[in-house]
Length: 177
Figure 1: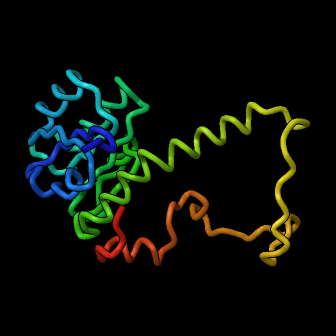
Figure 2: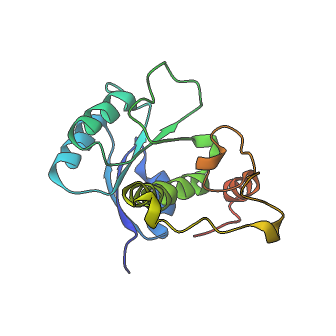
């Protein structure tokens, strides 16, 4: 079976992340921060799933150390709740609370490995193409949307990979990849 990518999972109980493996991700697991950093330095990974509460070294410290070495590797922080100390998320690409469920984690992993890189590539290509060579934007008149009045998105909504309804179905375990 082909893998969707290799994930370094630094978690007190990596068995809880089995759904990731069931959905085609290769898991490299560590149960503490020191072991996780050693694995990170010894083998290539596509992304990291990192539990915040690890004991001696919390997830924020681990994330910071990883970003110092390879800032392009996406880190998904798993936390018991959203209340984390200031600065705990500065080196993290996504946050998932355990109450969100493993399906939400699966969707987030998919997003940081697939959607986010595609958005960056598209932005770089658009920025590198001289304005006079760019195709004019397609008209969306048929959908009742004109270029003069594009729909307004809530702050941060343009980066959301799915609608709130889709996220709810993911949390409920209805949507599968």
